Image 1: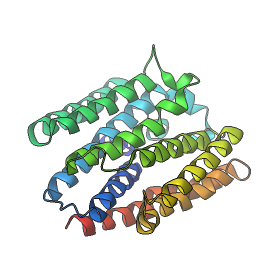
Image 2: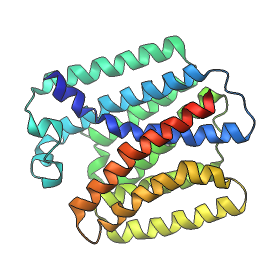
Image 3: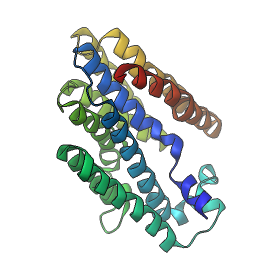
Length: 265
């Protein structure tokens, strides 16, 4: 049971957190900001990853019956191994409470507030009676909002939530919506948003709000992983989605984390 619960946290999906932290840290690096609290940065990254692991477990519990009918999700932890819902709730609850206790005791209050916003957003997205997941505004409240909050959580640990330019926050928000729509196989809106994200990125680069190194380190690996995800809208959905998952959630995550260690130490 413990193995299944741990699997339900989707450990490799911590790549989203690692990518967000790397992006924020590149702005600190090129602004000449000294990272005097490297272990706090790593602690924050770990806490955010544990929190999201717990939230993924809760998400899979609330979607259990829907996921059973989805062939692409046949390998989800609770599909392959049945576990009483009360144990899942207890497991997630312990992780969430532990994260907030540690955060309140050791890190800046602003960081804990952002964790709270992550939790609130995901609960509204997942749980009835609101369950934004089943509404038309789902793309606005899922990956997009959570991407922005992940970046902000690192920025407050560095000391300035606006360290990352507003235009870059907006780009990551739009890219997050685009990713969500790709996973949901919404071809037309995903294509439109991909174009909008590309135009905004061009504006950011032209106006020196992101330099070439930041682009190569923080954006290109995720962008390359998005190619098979986009192709999945048109051909070999399962195979292309699997390639995208491995590219981003495993290969890119290792690269992101090594870059973080280089920057903060």
